[in-house]
Every structure is written in structure tokens, then in C-alpha cells.
Length: 313
Length: 308
Image (tube, rainbow over all chains, first blue to last red; front, side, top):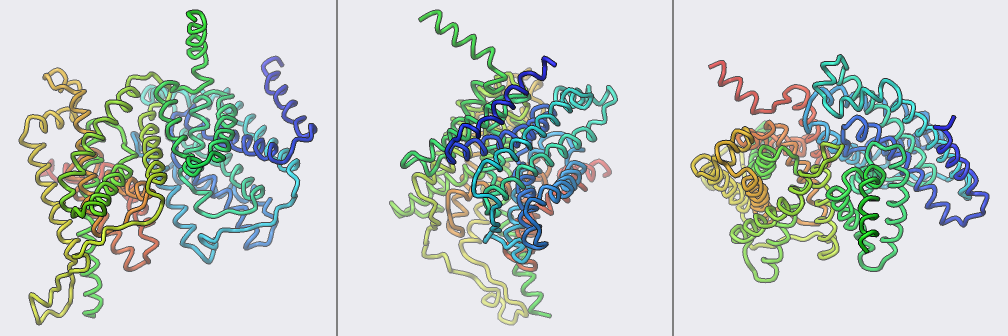
């Protein structure tokens, strides 16, 4: 029971937050933070635990977003059905991709993920009859008020947290870490590395797709340049995890909080606000050089440094 | 019938000309990959920076982009060495969970370059309106009775020839100079090279500079025939790594062939499927290479040699 105490306490606090009557801007920030936490946790399962760095999670995010948009556009269903529609679609693409690319060692996976996000964006832009191309898809939002969205994304995030925790603490989780640490050793211990890497990719992709489907419902408008964006989605997901802590349970949540608030803050500044991604780039470089395991992962090192400075001063 | 042949041949010529320039981009990437074992995902952004150098030299001082070949690549050589020394080397020393930290680092550098370019130069499309931009040669001038008419644009032709010259110079450097041999030794076996007295650290720095200089050359050759905007880099980074995969990781000859194949293939997709689909064609050929030929063209060349 004790090991579930912290998550449950945090959940209770988060569930109680809307009761404080926060204004809608704060709610918006909270919703975005939780959404990026979800995506970050999903990425972390594949990138952090299994060691397969993906530069193309925008592909899965975008597919989720477009599933919601397309069921509305073509079938006339509520975009909430996008959650259901996205799962098989994203799973299929991830499985196919895994079987092609994860057989290979080396940088192939990194390159393939980078390419798939870009290609889906271009495909979406060109299939004007099916996806409306660069015009994008507009839907009517179900609620104007944000509380409902908040509880929905919170629910999805809890689901993701539970799925990730169960997987990481199961036999699969140990396989993932073994693959990350030494693929040859893992293989020689009888782990079918391609299979488990594909599993990690598929689960991670499906969860990311859910975040995408939520995005459509929440934002009410999607276009290929936004939901398949390399800089705004793929890199942001990586940054959320890198800043917070690779292969840690709470890293993505911390990272998402920092990134969302930072993005909002920098964007509000005059002049540099336009190119807030410069700051992201600089932050990414600094983090990789000085805190390669993120704030949570390098917390012991960080604390020691801070304490020492305090002692000498 | 002749019209179709004409379209096909013209597409082929355009593809080969494009491929020659692509090869230059690919060689830079593959050199860095071979020596450093990291994918340089800021390769296209470096080219973008070089193109801006050439653009401003042209706009402010009226220096022809082809003359910039003597200015931009040395600058980018220094810039590449700086990146390697100041950013990549520290990351190589850091202990971390993820093996791909250097790759993520290059993405960060790319983000910074692209956005700084946006701040400084806005995201407007720019080009260098050289006065020979529309000059072209026609096959019918040489051979009046020709059944098919093929045109060759002057800047495209010059860019292609210069890229061939640069490639030959590079080959000479790698094959016949001490530094070049040391670079190749480092790529083949870092530890053995170290034992033989090669300064591996220095070779890494030089290689990153050399890769940057090569892609800068490609930038200078591209700008008279292309346009320029800050986000252009990511597109060329994608092209560079498709070529690298197609050619075989770390193989220079492979990169040349890969560049030509990609150039022709893209040009064909643009003519026969549609302009917007060329990037998808790029991906199709990338996946095909991964599935059927993971070692790239280089592995084909190798097996041929063995069977002979």
C-alpha cells in the first residue's frame, strides 16, 4: 500500500484543483501540462526504459489527432470516437514500423522515426480530398468550460501512468532495461530483442495517439503543420523527458510543468517571443551537457552541488 | 512518343544534376558519421547558415555565389570545429543513460541555428538574382536535327561541375594526404589508429569541420538555383540522411551513388506523380533501402568485389 501512497496523494490533489475555482488560463496551462506529461511518459517507456530514442512521436500524436478529426469529418461521428479509432491505426503503423526498422542496429531507428513524422505531415498536406490538406480540420468543441477537459486528460494520464508503471515493474520492463543497457547481452539471455522493442514502440505510440486525439477535441482545430510538427511536438516531447529525467517515473511530469510554463513565459516576451524555440534549443544543449539524466535523474548530483556551494558560502 | 522520351530524358538530366549536389551534402554527413559514429542532425542547418553567408555576400557586396565558395566553406570549417570542440566533445565525456545524447544535442544545435536565423533574417524567402540564372544550352544548338530537345541550365550545369571538382579534390585529400589517411584510419578503427599514433581527438575536430565545409560548398552551389529560408535546413538534413542510408553508413563512394539515385528518383516522382510528392518518394526509397538493402549501395559494391 505504501508504494501507492505518493501517486494517490498527488492524484487527490490534482482531482481537487478545479474545485478551487481557478481561472480558465490557469486551467489551460494545467491541461497542457498533463497532456505533455502523458506524451512524455509514453515516450519515456520507449526512449528512457528501452533506450530507443524516437524523434518522430509527432507521427503518432498527429495520427491520433487526425483520427479524431477524420471520424468527425467523414463519418459524422463525435470526435471523441477518435480515441477508439486512433488505437488500431496507430498500433498498426507502429507495428509495421517496428518490424522494418527495429530489426536493425545502430542509428536506423532514429532516422526512420525522424522521417515518418515528416512524411505523414507531407502526406496529410497532399491528400487534400481526404484530410483537407493545409486547411486543417475544424470541429465544434463539446464544452466551452475547461473542467470537463481537465478531468478527461487527468483520467488518460492516470491510465498512462498505471500502464507504464505496470509494464516497467513487470518482466517486460526488465527486458526493456536489459535491451537498453546491452543488446547483445540481452539477446544472449534469450530475450527476443526485436519483439520487445516493437512492443515498447507500439504501447508508447498508442498512448501518444491518445494525447493526439485529446488535442483535437480540446483545441477544436488541427492542421498538418501543427500536429505533425518536428519542433513543436516531437522535440518538445523529448525535451519534456530530458529536462525532467530519462527513465524516471516522475521526470515527465516535472519536465512537462517546466516546459509548458517556460514556453508560455518566453512566448509572452517581446522580440525573442517569436523564436521561443531558440531558448528550447539552448536549454536542451545545457541539459545534455550538465544534467544528462534530467532534474529527477540527476537530483542527487544536483543536491550535492547545491549543498557544497551552501557550505562554502 | 518523342515527346514522352523528351520528358523522360529531361527529367533524367535534371535528376542527375540535382543528384550531384545531393552527393556533396551526403558525403559531408557520411564522413562525420564514419569518424564520429554520430548522426549529425544539424547538417542541413549548417548548409542553411552557409547559404545565408553567400546570400549576404551577394546582396551587400555583389560577390557572386560561386566566388563565395572561397569564403563560406572556410568559415563553416571553423564553425564546425567550434561545435565539435565546445559542444560535442563535452557530451561524449558525460555519463548518461541514453546512448543517443549526441544526436539529441545536434538537434538542439539545429533548433538554435534555425531560430536565430529566423530572428535575424525573418522567415522571408530569399534568392540571389544572378544575371545568368535563366541562361540555358539546348541540344538543338549542337545537333540541329535532334529528335528530342533537351535543355541544360547554365547555373545547374556549373554547380554540378563544381560539385564534381570538389568531390575529386576531397577524394585526393582522403586518399593521398597524411591527414586524409589519418581520418580514414580513425573511421575504420579508432583504437588501432590511436595505437598507430593518430591524434584521434584532432581528427574528430577536423572531420566535423570538413563535413561542415562540404555542406557549405553545397549551399554555395545551391543558392544560385534555389531559394533560401530559415526552415530550409531540416529538409536538407532529411535528404542527407536518406542519402547516407542509401549509400551505406560511412561510405563515401556510397554517398555519391546514393545522392545520384535520390536525385533521379526525386526528379522522376516530381514529373510523374506530382511536385508535392517528391518528399514522400524520398521516404519510399528510404524504407525500401532499409528493408532490402540495409547496408546500402556500399554493401552491394563489397559483395561484387568478393565474388570476383
